[in-house]
Length: 94
Image 1 (cartoon, rainbow, N blue to C red):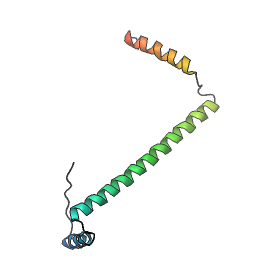
Image 2 (image 1 turned 90 degrees about the vertical axis):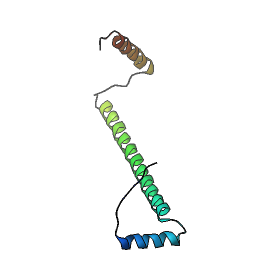
Image 3 (image 1 turned 135 degrees about the horizontal axis):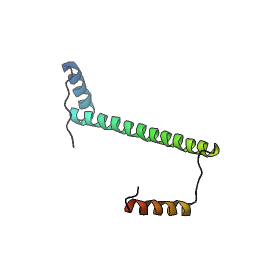
Image 4 (image 1 turned 60 degrees about the horizontal axis):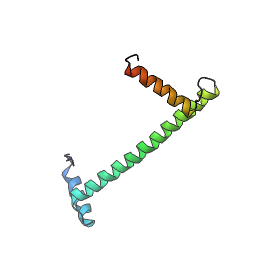
């Protein structure tokens, strides 16, 4: 849990307290609710951005494959190569 401190004009505070009272909440509860809404909005934004970034990477991978810049290998071949690299790493040769 964290605490936030900030300064606002007296008139703004008075009006915000009236709004909180009208909603049968304390000003602290109302501000906490609004901050949580902002945090959720940012969470959704970041998730959407991460999805977009992943889509770009996938499109680039297929573009590279189509352009002959890369090749896809079987799971078996990948596991074999990873085992080879791990063995080299254990021997200090990487």
